[in-house]
Length: 112
Ligand code: 5GP
Ligand code: ZN
Image (cartoon, rainbow, N blue to C red; front, side, top):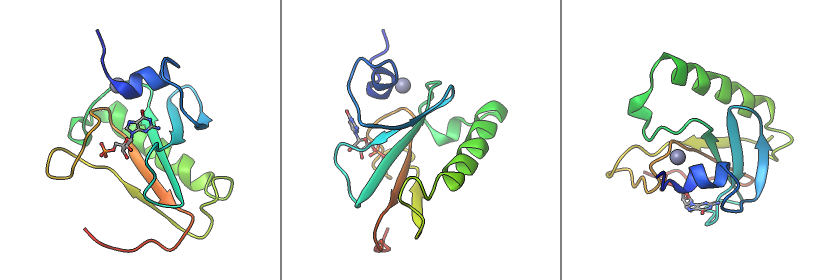
């Protein structure tokens, strides 16, 4: 059984505020936003870590980064945005399904 919370969101078993969806990606609002705009962008194919990229997943990532760039104005990110992928324990990764945090909508403080 797949206990992954993001797989359940993709399957529609857990509700989410969807922002964008196509056959390979889902974007939805983070439940605990740390910026005015805080969107999570996930692959529909489950994999846990950035360190698990293979050629197909790297290609997905490239297409997805392009997609986010193209959509920046409709997402309200025209004045700039930050993408974050937490990898593993030291980075505080709490959901083990790859996700890109998309942050923006305001001036973002820089920190580690
Ligand atoms: P991580 O710390 O793994 O990089 O980020 C996980 C993110 O998922 C957190 O920012 C957290 O707020 C968000 N999150 C966890 N559970 C849910 C949920 O059920 N729905 C939504 N929309 N976001 C969630
Ligand atoms: Zn998953």
